[in-house]
Image (cartoon, rainbow, N blue to C red; front, top):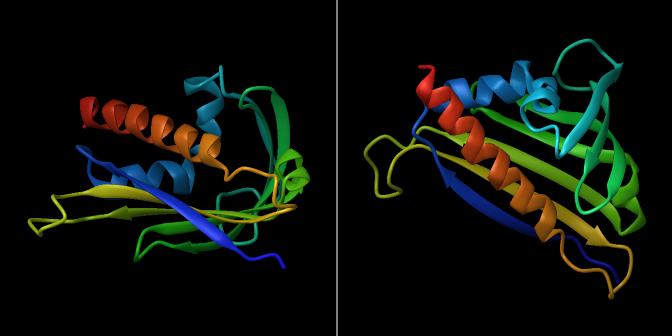
Length: 155
């Protein structure tokens, strides 16, 4: 019996969470220019902005060339989170369900240690021999750290 599982990672942010979230909300297609070794192309298939219901096509490289049609399932500007879902593409050869959630959290002076981005990947394996999607999470963390440094330097 298949079941949905999840993995997650947090990235401490030096930049304001609003600006970090704003990049993914408004400029995510710029990843092609910022990380050409990982992202080869981007285009909107449905919609013209990064908003709920928009569908994008990405060509990326994660060990080998791959492509995905991704739908923005949910965008919450108040809580600063976005839920993406792969609706077609290479990831679905291995996972029946593949969703990623980005949250940009203003931690203030709480015990969590300040601002952070949290990536959660929810997935259902196509079969028991498929590994969890750690490589996707590692890429999200790498991009987040680089983007955070870029925003912090330019703030």
